[in-house]
Length: 135
Length: 265
View (cartoon, chains in turn purple, cyan):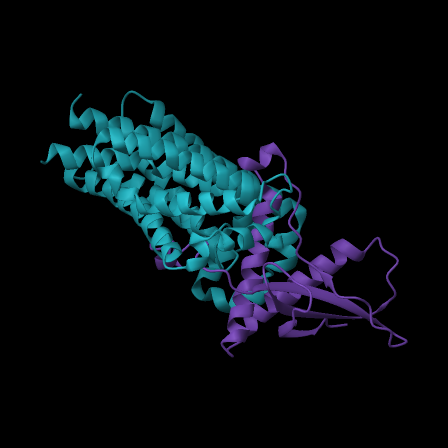
């Protein structure tokens, strides 16, 4: 970590590749499958956000954890800690986003898909990894 | 003005800008803790194994206190930048303490909070600690030059990897980055293909032109002004606020490196 901080890679915005997206859906007790929801959505910004943007910083930190696990899945070496972090992100986001909604009770599933940055009709969704939330 | 006076001015400016950056970092860390996301996502039981021996430093009490520690140290750093008498090592110790706090946050969340900006802040803080510590002038100057080298490298590397991609030259890459939902780019940002192509070429040219900053102190100033506008634009477009703060604190080092280069022939 010390070396990564002292000698960062500095390769910003180099190549457009597929973007990992964290999604979740609920499977109701009667087996009905709900739609997939994107869990990490960029928070709104104001002019203040140019200098102070805690929601944006949190969002980027969450995304980094998802990106890292997605990369590990792509390499075929998913790390248990990375996975646990992603599951915790799913739990946190599901609770925050759907607590007020009239969602049917059931089992939550999550997945990380590889999506093109600019989606077009007919894009195939590639599932990088996924799982269910512990009940 | 003598080199010593100029070095003093540059390090004071860097201290003040770094202190302001760290106050923002502390406020954001505080807000993140208050929102509960740190407790819910980066759980101690999940990360304990990865932390290893560092878990002693990751205790809840230390993490909770971190924004206050950072604010206090940043205030000391700001004070050190303004004090006439610089003989004590208050500034150096404050900068070193803040560097440790940046490392602590990175370990606490098992990565960077805001990409490369965390790395740049860490570098500036560590080198400021060295540049204002009671060590030889050569070491002090080397510390500021190291910051300048990292700034140059950050632009050059980013420029080189973009220049290799055809999609960057025709504007497609920038268009795609603007469309990535994670950045939440505001809708009012214009996206005409011609404009994106011009902007893309401009970004590549700006980044690859970084060595121009070393040609003279005037070119360093001009490059710094353009760089600052670039980071401001990045903050407005992509929401990368900490990059403005971190690079603002680092950019004065470019001027000093150019000055030193000329002083030594």
